[in-house]
Image 1 (cartoon, rainbow, N blue to C red):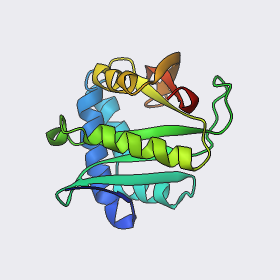
Image 2: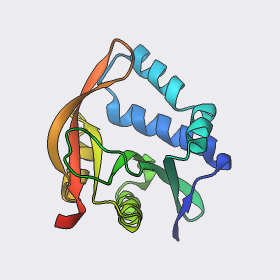
Image 3: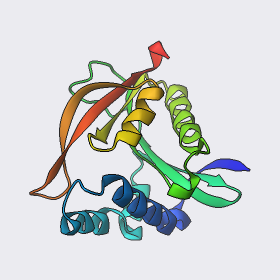
Length: 174
């Protein structure tokens, strides 16, 4: 059984654990072990997630499979980008799935859930950043209709950045 539920404070540890593991696995090789460790410890701990949950702009959802947290997403409605000439767009800030749930279409279900949520809130498109070295994610987004529209230097630390694709999905074309 699959369910998608809005995250609460009781999900902070689960989100932190899933995020830390998924980011490390998908971005392995993008930086040194030290840089990756610093990034993960700063961004994927229960307190950091708790702070994000308390920010009303952030919308977190958990996808559960047979009662177990399989992954999560974070979107921000009305998060425009200067290089996207469309109003009322949503940023897909995070979508991660535990590796043992790959191949079950859970990521696609969670993405479609967020697309529908954005549409229901009057949004006209969705954008995201995807690390250029994360071919699995880029292929996933392209299959869902996202197009590469630019690049971005995503700073992992003050001195290290990864080059990412900026990708966009127009809802009028979907």
